[in-house]
Length: 224
Image (cartoon, rainbow, N blue to C red; front, top):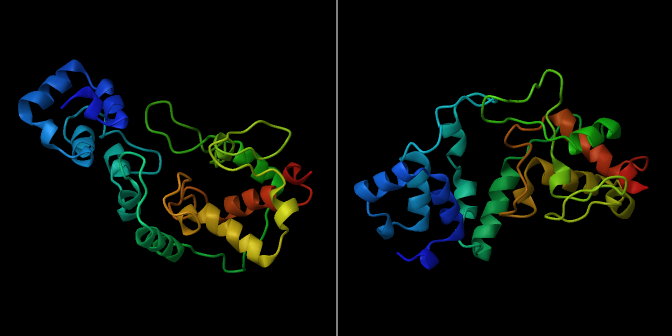
């Protein structure tokens, strides 16, 4: 297999391995006969190249975290491709089925706490230097992908959210749409890069309500 025929993502993975590990792969298996998906699975789970026995903050091990669910497998198409329309519609349907709504209806929370959460990168990390969740709320890290308000600089991977509530208003339909996207983004944008904050248990109900307030509340800097 020539260097040109190996997907860039797999070259990065190979580069991260030690020379000993690469030699072991060559001795044990003919990886040139593997599909990109098979090679990725082999490198991650079978070569002992990653510390998959490490405990993770949400409980369990790094190995358990690396196992993809059906939705992730469907969307993880090597080479930057996308599933066909039928598959995308099925992904969206499956995502909608995971959404659990608050018993008292969708409400806006505290936009000031929502601002802190949107700009916080605290989360469930792997390794020895993990986050102290007793003193810091688990954040959404929204700024990494979105420009959210004009008083701070955010990312460009996702669409700008500046003026989100000012443009869309705060109707029940908009609140439901916003809740759905935060809870499980694939419901609206199948195979998006955006995390599934609610369905994975990463953000709790109150945190979602507070981030929604940051996006929708007329007093929020987002809408000034």
